[in-house]
Image (spheres, rainbow, N blue to C red):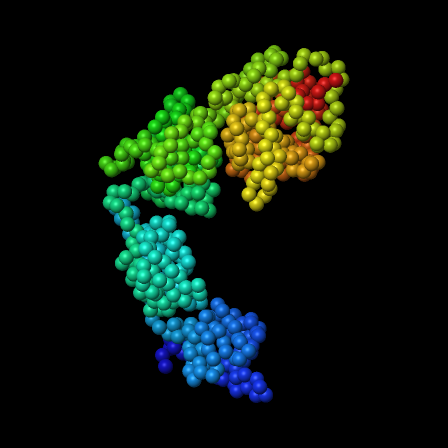
Length: 573
C-alpha cells in the first residue's frame, strides 16, 4: 500500500448490517476500530455521530440524512436498504467518498496569467476540491484572482471574469453541475474536466482595443456601487490602484503629479447621488463641461461610467488611443425633477437639464457690514452661493435685561431656536416624513435649507452639499436640532450631542444636553451658546467648525460683549 493511501485506509469506515430481533428491523452499523455506531431510526446525524467523526475530519457530514423505521437510510439524497445485497458496500463507498477522492491525483494547477502589453490580460481558471469535497473555482486576471463555489459561477460571469454560459444548472446538493449542456460530477475527474472546459470555452470575449486605462466594474457592496482600477506613478514606478470607487480614489486619479490619465484642471467629486464633473480655471473658479453633464451614478451601468471617465474631454490627450472617440452621454444625467430610481438604458436617451453647478463654500467667508439690521432675503439665483451666510440679526431693541440661559429642558431650546430662524429668514420649511432602510420609517424632519433645494432623502442631509438647520423628531417628546455646512454636522440632542467634523470623519460624542442659545457674530457666522463643559470638549474640533461658520461661547463669554453677538434665541427682554 502506498504512503498516500495509508491515511485514507486508516480512517475509512466499514459498515455491517446487524440483524434485528423481536420484531426490530435490520440496521446499518458504522465501524471504525473499536468505535461502533448503529444507524437507528428517528435520530438526526448529530445524535448519531456521538464519536464526532465529522468534527475529527474522518468523514464529511452528510447534507441530508434520514433513517426510516424499516432501517433504510437516505444519505445525501440516495436510499440504502438493509435488505439489498450490495447496500452495505454502496453506503460504505458513499460515506468514505472523501477518502476515495483523496487517494487520487491532485488536479494540476493552471498557470497564472500575467499582464499583457495591451488590452485586458488573459484569464485562466483552476478548479479543485476543498477538504469537504466541494468544487471550488479560481479565476485569475493578472495580479488579481477570485475564488467561488458552484453557486458563484453566475457572479463570475456578471463581473466579467468569464463568458456568460448559455445554460447553467446546479444540483441542489451540489453533487454535479451542468454547464452549457455538459454534465460535470462533483469528484476529482469532474473538477479536472470542468477546469479544462472553462479554460477552453469560457474565456471572456473582449474586443481588441476596447480596454480603457480607467476600468470600472460593478460592486454592490461599495457605497457607490462600483470598483475602479487604474495605474499611477509612485517613486518612478508604475503602481496599480484599485478598490471601491470613492472620493479618495478620485483624488489620486486627478492628482497630476501622481497620475497623467486626466487633463490638468479636471475635478471629479462624489456627492451622493451624483458624480460632479468640473474644470478648474487658473483663477480658482470652476465650470461644468457642457457635453458632459453631471451623472446620477446609481442610474448608469459600469460600462457607461467607464466610458465617461475615459472621455476625450476628461482624459489627457497624450494617453488617448485612436479608438477612443467622443461619444454623447445621455443616461444618468442629473436633473432637478428626476425622481425615478430605476436605471435607464443608454439605448433610449431621454432629454434632461443638467443641474446647477456645485460650488462648495470657501474656507473663509467674505466679511459683511455689521450695521445692517434688516435681514435680506437669500439670493434668488438657481444656485445660491454657500459663501453668503444669511444674517439673522434681531431688531434694534435695547438689551434691558440679560436673557435666561439657565433652562435645562432641551426641547424648550431646540424647537424655539428653529422657529425663530424660520421667522427671521422667511425661508419655507420642508416638513417631511423620511425613512432609512432597516433603521427607521416615516420619521418626521423639519428642514431649513439655505440652498433652497428640495430634500427627498435622508442621505441628502448627510452630504457636504447640504447647508442649513433641521429638526429630527425622534419621539413625541424627543427632538434633536442639527446644523450642517461643509460636511460638518453638529447635532444637539436631549441625552447626547454629537459632532462630525467632515463628511467622512468619525463622529465625536458629548454626553448630555449642551445647547443654551444661538447668536451671530459681526461676520454673520453662527455662534452657539453652550454649557461650559461642552465648550472645553469642543476645542479639539474648532478648526473644522470655524470653516463651517460655527463658533461656540459660554454664557459668561457672551456677556462680556453682548453687542458684538446679537442673539437669535433666547429673545432679549
